[in-house]
Image (tube, rainbow, N blue to C red):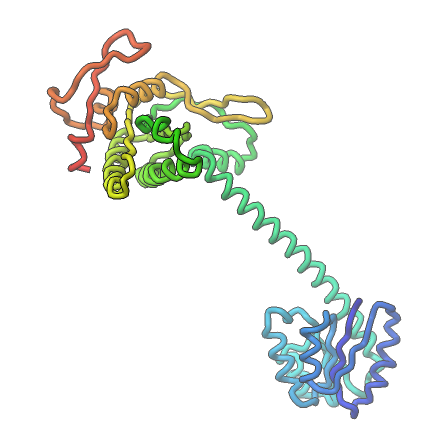
Length: 356
């Protein structure tokens, strides 16, 4: 239904306006008549109006039109002015925002002017509806992507974003040299077995919030959480070491607070190793996991299992790559599962916590 609001005085002979408007021959057009600007303004908030026809000489008509067109809600609503004379009034009509005009002594032109304004309004309404649908879809997609982004490694997100721009549907395998930091909470299963599930999650999040914030602050990425463990990836070995030292320092502070609340300390064992990694796709057509594969990951995990709770165990390779000068007296050798010979390693938290 197209509602035309006519704001005109008795002097304009509204019946004549109605006569001319009936010539539009549109059964879906309804005419709403009001004799003052105030009455017409009230209708705008009660009824969906497709067109306003206003007597330009009516008290408040000029200001009403200007304010209407300045309002974002009504700026696309067409306004047709009926004027009594040509000249400066025509210029004023357009300056104040009206879309067109008809001279009072040329009312037979009224249907010719009204039809395109109604058509324009209909097109604008359709465009607004389509725009609204697109905006809602865009908001939905934005929230969806932001949600997904929080559940996958940032590295994978960035790679997928790049490949999407290239219109490529597959992320190829790559061989890289990376530093892996593997962390695990000491005896977390024992600590959690008598706790409600929500308390278990709260305990995990209290430490993983620290872990994730510091890792991303130091140019790292969390590849995955594995229960009470995490696997983090760094391009630079020194970034990994600094990040893990700061993680352990913050967890020490957290445990002071837990102690004051008679809660058991949460202690991370952390292992760090640097070496070649294959980043590859594992899975099927319906679901892939872009994961890290190689002995470097296994070595970091085994170093973690040998580390003291609350400490960090790093390999000789990581120490060299990070260019850390650690006195040989601080090194010791361990036999890692699956290795033929002993590995030189360093327990570094106490050595580095005052430095970083």
